[in-house]
Image (cartoon, rainbow, N blue to C red; front, side, top):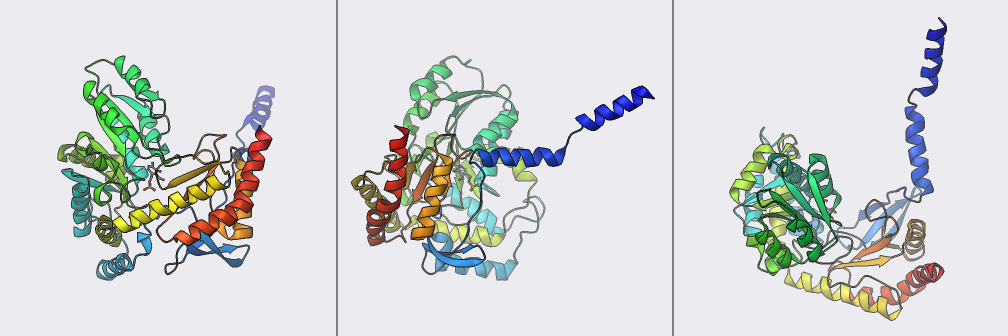
Length: 422
Ligand code: PLP
């Protein structure tokens, strides 16, 4: 009896307290300044970047300065028209996985268009670029026996998850560091299947990768190349075909990953490659096989958006010009930013709480919505704003906002913090 009582008491004290666990974890997250709250932003279709924020039960007008709807195609009249037309024709859902009644003619046509966009034999749609990365990489790592991965240290979480879950030997090379990559490749066995995984434009830095040099190493060491072009499709290269196309190395990249949810303004992701690789992933990737396909109206709207994006040289030039204006304004007011030649303007604050504070000042005093970016999206200590400009941010807005608003808010807050750090 005594042993039973002791066992019961010890069980009662040591048993898992789920409620406490979750609550403690959240308290710890909050104490580190890493807790996320979502702002409720309704973007206005007619006059984006204007939007309405629902805040404390009221609505207020704001302007969005951090959207990934880079070409604003999610609100383009022709794209909306196509989407509504197909909803009326086919309904709002796809009806199943691609295998079970979820492949419409729109899905098939979109895959042909994506293959053509990247000059590849075939393409495969996924519910998101996240799933495309995660599931494709997991499948390759699992199926290519003994596969070793060479992965850039700043690769997106979706790629890291795919690789990690597969539990294969992974060599992480320093960001964009070709010499380090080669050092690691040199140690590999010639017969080992190898996969080099990287992005063409890093989403949080706006910096390009040395694609040509990586391709050269891939050839030298007989490695497959996997390139995430999520932040460059629609924006860079001839007709927005991406940075690999701009550098004429698309043919040397084995698998290109892209998204429909940023420059094309829709939802979903894809890979493009030769027809055997696509058929292989189609046949073996759980993240493709076991999930319902996108609504056909999304596929139809994506087809339309890609067509528009191909002809959107003027929009692409506007983004570039507006981004340069912002950079000029920031320079003029001594606000440090990470220099690059892309549409992504990172302004580091190096502190999650300060980043949130600055974001609150911007929205409350100036109606500018810029999301603070912190861990796990970027490493701890690398907190920042990530400003993105669309063609609908007018040049005069860009000048006046950087001059007036960045002066009052960004400079005061960012510089005060930097001075304090020194
Ligand atoms: N790859 C990169 C580099 C990203 O930044 C993101 C998302 O922001 C993704 C993949 C995932 O894209 P999606 O939103 O289509 O899932």
